[in-house]
Length: 262
Image (cartoon, rainbow, N blue to C red; front, side, top):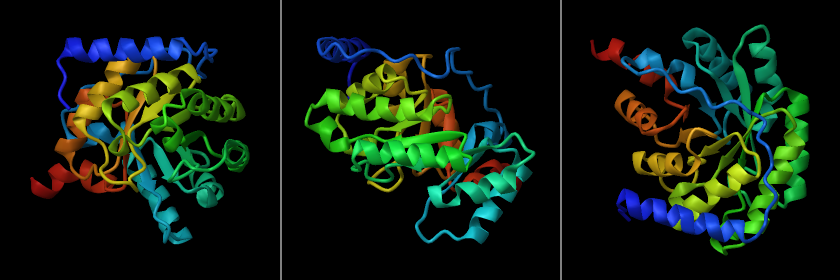
């Protein structure tokens, strides 16, 4: 659905008022300073510091993860994003570098009970994760049960302590109202980022979704675009729309695109 800016701002305010009425206690985010704005993207390699090189396929092997880490070091990506079972290996491979180890919680459905997400969060941090990407309770959001969604996110944020939490809202399954509510609830629960997609359910990131998320969270939260990002032009458009991180499995192809066609 296409909205004018005025209509969009009106909808955001309406949902904000609805959430305010629930009197959900705001949680201070781990990252107190404004999210660093990406530098202008002129060429493919400019994207490297924003890219979380991702491998979340169920058939991924230890050898695949080692190769992923080698590519992160070679191309100076932000870090790797792997399933919890590979966090320890990724930490081992990236020791001595400034690359992050990112992992996922409640992935990919978000349908775990909150206690399970909390325990998983604590465990992956013990294994060496620097950042945690959690999937919201999508069903509760679609039911309009905002308190349950907020409590779920907040519990993971509290379990993570000083580790930043990104909240995956799965935009491809949501309407505009639900996307706005998800972002507002993530912000109120103390998340550091909102993230578009898991990459496992329908479509991935779109410029329109990133623009909407940016309109909701402003500069207070980062925005991670993920899912279906396979070329430089798409990646640059998402950054220009407001994305501050990119989750990509085609990372190497994206940052070497000019070399391949030049």
